[in-house]
Length: 387
Ligand SMILES: C[S@@+](CC[C@H](N)C(=O)[O-])C[C@H]1O[C@@H](n2cnc3c(N)ncnc32)[C@H](O)[C@@H]1O
Ligand code: SF4
Image 1: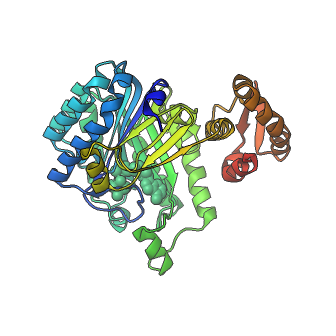
Image 2 (image 1 turned 180 degrees about the vertical axis):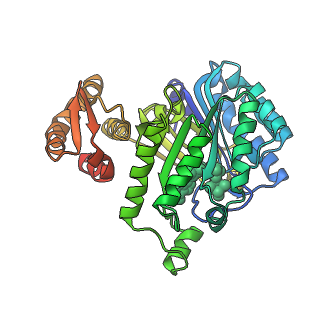
């Protein structure tokens, strides 16, 4: 992979994975290690080395910067100062939307003031559930009473844009309980709400608990109902669905995620981070020790690298867009892509029309949209559009 060729593409969206948590939630398969101060410092040294070849590219700033994890809010004040220094070549050129993921109860007024002063203008808070028994069953380290004070602290620090993450279809959360969760979340006046259907990821404690019968998972129909309830309750509260799992007040969509779903290039730094730049895709290995050791030795971090051909590149960028409520301008994108696009359009057009006849897609204003039914069966639509 020739990074210097890729650098010409100037990815405008930067993701940074902070791979530390204070424990492991039962459902989570995101890569993280237990937080430790020395470990975090070694990680920051390695991150600086990984970013170094890209600093010239990023010197003009970036449209979005997303610091996710893991639990970035676990970094100490001194570690945040160090991170701001590492990012200075990028942030000096200006950052449009700068998001930090945080867990309730891990934020202080002092830390938030430092984040705001550095330019962070959006916080995404992992609420998941608003019931202490459910949070404790999920092995979360926060309690319901931590959530409202965390939101208030974010706003008091001058960070106005606050998103909350919730999980639908959690064991033991019946419809009335779920409506209550949504009402409590709405009362916090979030700008953005993500509602993810619970995924049972291989290797997680939840997967073990489900396999041995210690946890009874809700039926698919109950999960579907929970997602429908969320869509209608959030719409009534003025949070518009702009992506299959995401809702926002006008102008408060996550610009970072939107750019990735619209097919933009992004550079991911840190263990387990994924990148898409031009026709290159690479994902760093989810291994902090190996990440640090490679960068300390002057080598790139271990990663899986997959260059894709022009057709796969276009296909992948278009398929993601079916998640968005704004629809997909398939014919226009194909026309812009030249011969590869023309071939794809010839192949897709009859299939898109069949999907329209089946009531899962609809065409209007040169765009293709999923219908309500289409969103329920999105995976099977995408499968039919794959080669
Ligand atoms: C990178 S994660 C974690 C962010 C933050 N550390 C936290 O826990 O609050 C981002 C979001 O993914 C969601 N998530 C993680 N694992 C999930 C799963 N197995 N099923 C559904 N949602 C999941 C959670 O809503 C979480 O807030
Ligand atoms: S959900 Fe968040 S806090 Fe829990 S293990 Fe995953 S990344 Fe860490």
